[in-house]
Image (cartoon, rainbow, N blue to C red; front, side, top):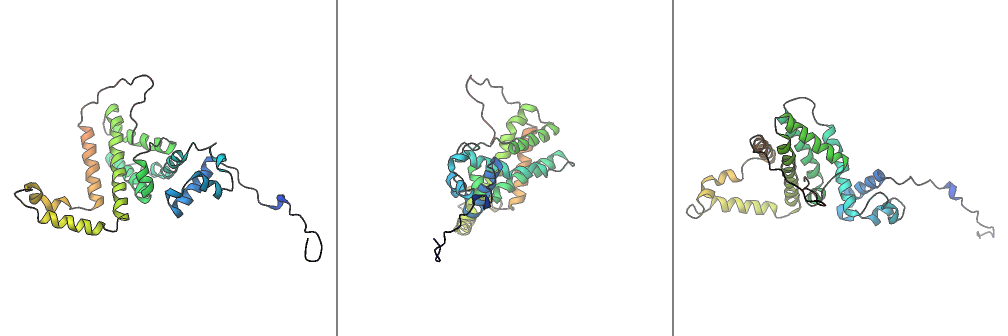
Length: 244
C-alpha cells in the first residue's frame, strides 16, 4: 500500500532489460574484465556468474572448470599475435617477431604467464600460433620432425622469461637482490670461482631485448643444425608430450 492507501502498481518484468544470451565468448570477456580489475585469483565460476547475472551451473555448458576457463582466457589473449605477423621479410626475423609478440602478451599478463607453464593451451588461437611457428621453421629449411620438437623449445623461452619478469616486478627486494649479486660477482674469489671472476662483468650485461633476441638466434641456429629426433611409438591409450 502507498502512504495514501492506494495499492502500488505492479512493475512488469518486461520493462527490465533482457539479459544477453550466454556464450563462450561472453564468459571469457567477463573473465578478462575481472582478471584485469581484481587478478586471476578472483576469476572463478561463481564470480563470473554473478557478473553475468546467472547461476554458476549455467557456465558449465560452455566451460568445463576453472582451469579450462583460464586456458580459454590465454587463448583469447593470443588472438592478435598471428594477426599482426608481418607477411614479408626474412623468415628468421618474422619468427623472432612472432615469438616476441607471444612473450609480450604473457609479460603483460603475469598471472597468465605463470599459468601457461603448467596448463596446456589447445584453443584455435594457440593452434594458429603453433602453425605459424612451424611454417616459418619449415620455410627456413628445418625438417618437419625437428620443427615439431622445436616449437616447444621456442615457445618455452618467452614463457619462462615472462614468468621471471613477473617475479621481478612483484618482488620489492628485487633491486637489492640484484645489487647484492653484482657485488658478490665483482668480489668473487678468483681462486675459488675462477670463471665467475674472469667473465663476471658479462654475466649481468645486456638488456632484456638484446638477450632475448640472442637467445632466439641460439635456439634457431640449434634447430637448423640439429640431428633428426628419433621416432617414438606411442603406446595405445597414451598421448605424446604436448608443446608448451
